[in-house]
Length: 176
Image 1 (cartoon, rainbow, N blue to C red):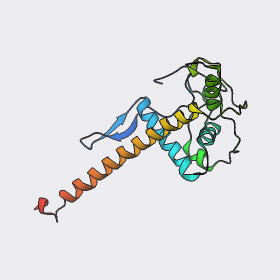
Image 2: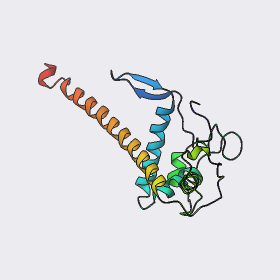
Image 3: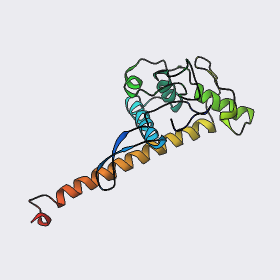
Image 4: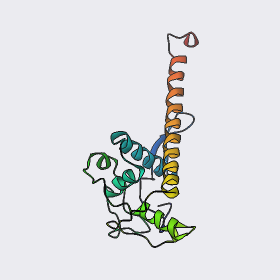
């Protein structure tokens, strides 16, 4: 675990994640950067399967399908649990599923707190209708930016790999 505290909402694998170096060699990555890429990929999968969902509903779906780890309920080590992308896109989740992450952000915004992590954690099963506003928009923008960044990185790596295969192929002018 690279991060722990009341601000942790979800856990994703971040140890020994397979990837590639700039020299196109297989390598492993550790830490929250690898976990963030996996999480943004899972969010993108959910949104591609359910494009009609709001950002609040996407997060609620991911939280509802997370595997509870550690002590029951939310904790500082695992948040609400480990992300499970397959379950997030295949499990029947109510459109009104609880979303304690957005509820906590809305509570912080309405109370004027500058640090949402400093507010009391809200347990799954509670709800607040004050779920829209700048906090949810900011979260959406962060998730979208992370997803776009991940897709750009994958596109660049695949494009370079294909270009290098064409340039070095036996039938090309460079390969003669």
